[in-house]
Length: 232
Image 1 (cartoon, helix red, strand yellow):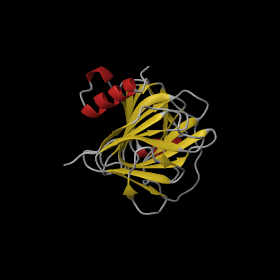
Image 2 (tube, rainbow, N blue to C red; image 1 turned 90 degrees about the vertical axis):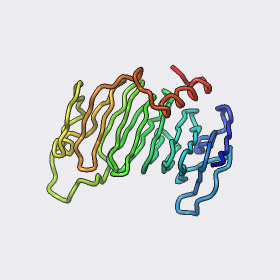
Image 3 (cartoon, one colour; image 1 turned 120 degrees about the vertical axis):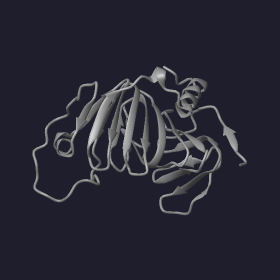
């Protein structure tokens, strides 16, 4: 397979409402809202509603307006939903995402089919698998995980009282479907913790050790963060 390798150092190109395709390798396509998919171009500016899709053995890096960085692994489908104001809102339908988010006033969130992860500055990665199971790993800071507005396991029914945000303690804690539906507000996932939310609504939070990770995707993102001066 012939690879296209493109790189630009992180800079201040992104405006208040635009992200920039800062790096990509392999087969990467973009489209605006519901328009046709087109081959990616290095330095392309991406606006609200734009999608990015990566193929096999492909990756992409996006520079957000506040110089935060989001990276897509292979076979990933990702959308920029909103970049203005106090919220950066995105969507991950499938694949892998690495997020290095600056500690600014704006909130950043990623919505998947089964969970929404929201932060105000942190380093975390997120994977959405073929069955819509979502897993979040937190490397720095905290991530609040909550159900999406219309989670796949919900059905119409009577209204219920919803408790406030709760922190579920490690080492391992299973959250059943009914519990997940009643708690949340959100579950806090701290540094060196991971959380998995399954399609049926059950969830599990447990600790993990970043030092023991051997996955090439993780090593590559750490190296990219160093190159761009984003290691903390």
